[in-house]
Length: 167
Length: 167
Image (cartoon, rainbow over all chains, first blue to last red; front, top):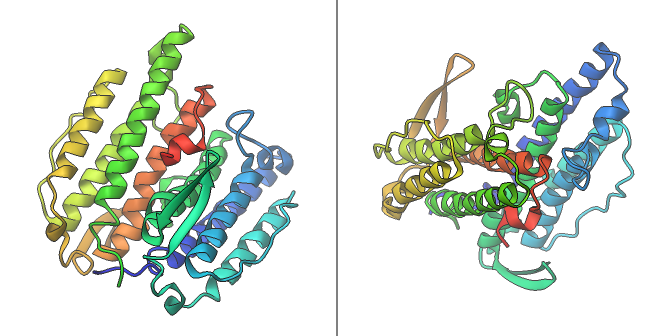
């Protein structure tokens, strides 16, 4: 045994959320420099029925907060999904990180065996906490961070893979 | 302690590579049904200087294989990056999974403390194995699987989030 459930979740979430914050700052600066309407970037989606950039940030926030909540049985804060601007998205990210920062490693004790039941495709699906983290929470959370990055790249914002990885 | 380095890597890679294989099968079927040239899909990229769908699959394969190799000091197989068709990408994925399947849990023993040095932005960067897996390998690997999905969605292939998650 060499990793804790805490190590494989909270620091991974906060790191990627801080990276997402930096990417959004670069996107806002890009819009200003190029005299683009920030709303265009914020509402871009890669396909009609996919989430916009705003939606990707909201879902990344939710994935981190709800994943943590289900693994630790801590009540998560509720966010209203009303963000429409870059500063509001930054606030959403900051509030999410502030919540994650309150969670202590020992609150994940035993979470690997905790039974977690969520509805997927209309069916109740049972996970151990460990399977939930590795097959659902992390791939889902990183999906939304990656897709936010992909939307910004698609619109020509000058960022690169090392910015996504945070190096 | 509740997770092993093996659990947080090999089964995560093989699960996502199998999912990627299924997504590519759906993409190939979509091209056939809609009388689209499969090459168009295979060479789609979200921005001029990003990898195409082919490139995303090759990089996902590399991320899994090289991450595993650095963590275990096992020599990885070498793949030539010559894929140009869906069947060839399927073969690349199958060969990657076949390699991962040969790795035994005990070959990851001690990998959390192994010193790993890679060049990032031209600088040698030192990681413990644990930091390398959580801050580099997993986010990088899932980046390429997600971006392959995003390319397919962007081109109208009928797949959804549960297909990406494998449920």
